[in-house]
Length: 285
Image (spheres, rainbow, N blue to C red):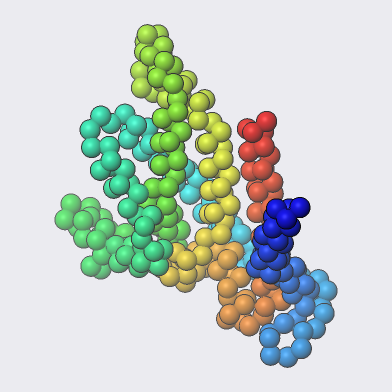
């Protein structure tokens, strides 16, 4: 009985912590989304007006389009590169630890430092990339100063900064594949590409699907990089949903509309989180 009391005591403490720091902010955010709030005067219940204000804002559609495009580009570039890097690292016979450390190093840099570093790389004047292009006699680019290249430039940065974690997870999954499968494939005359297609991908499909869903959830919440590197410009080409939410809350001082936007984003991310739970439960069954 005493042991049960101790267990219930720890459980109650955990529930209190979750209620205060996780559940209460969610409930409070839902209430705020139906109020006019500036934290100076008393809140006023306005019903669906905050949502209507969002739908009337032209920047609302722009932010969702930029976020969706950023997610697609991040999946095309940032999803395949870590997998291919893991396959190459798994085939190495020498200096494995050195190359794994080299791939993981960018993850250890704070996101703000990484963004400032790459902002200098992209500088159209003395920046690293244009300096290299000039040395090679190639045309330079405006990178972050052009609406055509700003978003893809941020995608390249986030891919470089985050690929280390995904690469190590893929590498761990690759090392669980029985070597007999590769030996059988080699006896059948399979090359590297066919071994990857017929052995590696089927054996790691659960990890690939899991990381795909997690990456969608993470990339749809991108904020730090566009906030520091472009501020949403040029011509709103890098305004994301979270950046628009920040503007409503801390630039326009309209916390009610910001909460309404966060509630919409919460619902969208909830769909992908539900899919993630379905996938992981199916794997555990």
